[in-house]
Image (cartoon, rainbow, N blue to C red):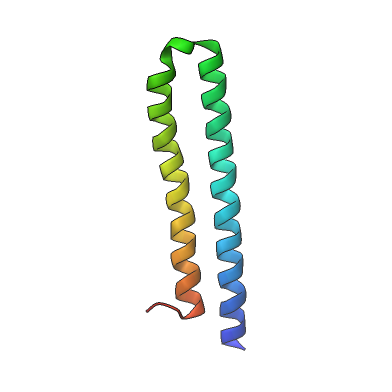
Length: 76
């Protein structure tokens, strides 16, 4: 019973982690496109900030993956 619930928790963790990262990168990309369309001269600086935001969003997805692997018993 506990192992089954751990597997369910692993699925929920990776599901919400992937949804959150996808939404975060989507919002960041929309902001980048808006900024570049309004002021094309700041494209280089805006892309740098976008990459930082995308990396932070992906870090959350990686944390969800680690939690899911831990719950499913594949690590530790």
